[in-house]
Amino acid sequence: MKMYEFKLVLGGVSDVTDDQGDTLHQAGCDDGTIVTRDGMVFIRFSRESSSLEEAINSAAMNVQKAGFHVEHVEVHCPV
Image (cartoon, rainbow, N blue to C red; front, side, top):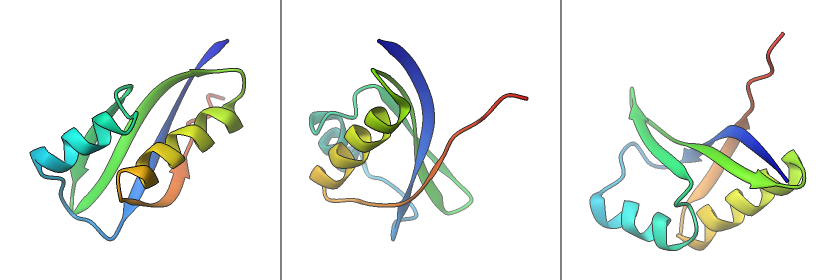
């Protein structure tokens, strides 16, 4: 398995409360860091998986399980 790094940008929220952060953590997002910047909320993940697609899909399902909507995904591709 390999470690994949990516961001899930959440839609419809501009901040995350401590309780919501706990809910995300309990839903399986314990390998992500919640960041709020300029009215945008995203979770920076470092997730171990057999593929990038599987890592992103499982993280998105965890976010949705916590009651949030994933607006889009960002993956940094080094040159």
